[in-house]
Amino acid sequence: MKLVVAIVQNQDSRRLADEFTEKGVRATKLSSTGGFLRAGNTTFLMGVEDKKVNETLDLIKENCSTRTQTMMSPPSYDFSLESDLTYPVNVEVGGATIFVLPIDQFLQF
Image (cartoon, rainbow, N blue to C red; front, side, top):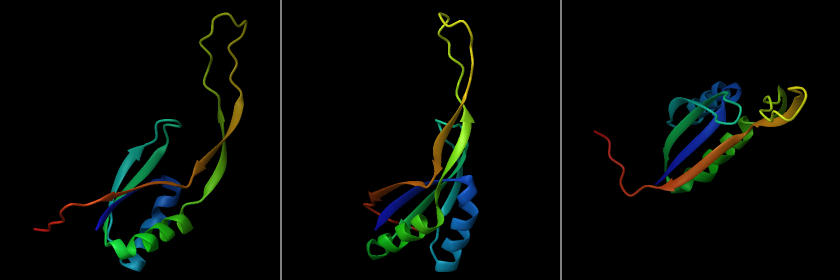
C-alpha cells in the first residue's frame, strides 16, 4: 500500500474529486496554499493499493492541466533604482505535485 499525496490547483480540484468519486478512489481533501503564488490549492491524501497507484496517477494527470497565468512581478526593494515598477510576467500554473510514499501499516477503526 502507498500514501499518495497530490497537491492540485483549486481550479482542478472539483473535477478531480468528482473523478475520484466516480472511479471509487477514496481521498481526504485538505485546503492548502501555495508558497510561490500564494494561491489556493487542494491537497488530496489517498491510501492506494500498490496495483492501483498507476491508475490513480493517470486520473490525476488527466484532470489537472497546466496553463499560463499572467501575474504582476513583486516590487523590487533595490533602492538604487530610480523607480519601483512592477511588470506582468507569465508563469505556468496548474498541474499537480504528487508524492508517493510507502505505508508500513494501515489501520481503520
